[in-house]
View: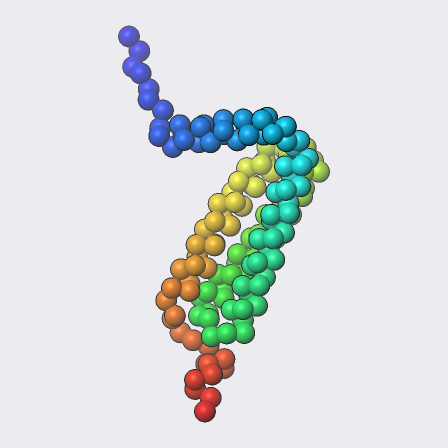
Length: 134
């Protein structure tokens, strides 16, 4: 008798999420073009918010490591957007799908880095520190 191989818990969750997303797309009769457009609009919103955070960190005494993290986040978001555009116009080649998923993971990691960079005030940038300019 062959051994029974239990699926990994994460695999099962991922499959359930994919099934639910598929049902939502079918139930609401969402067209792929409409889903792509919504995705693009949300990405534009995210990039705009990231630029806002970059400006806010630049004009305040935010830690240098937080400023560096948000710069990386913006760069990765822009690269991710480029991959997404190329992917959309070339009918989703599998290599670009993989790069896009990798980019999503990097965006998530950098967003976490930005958050963690604001937790520890670290070394301040003295030229912007208002308390020391009496």
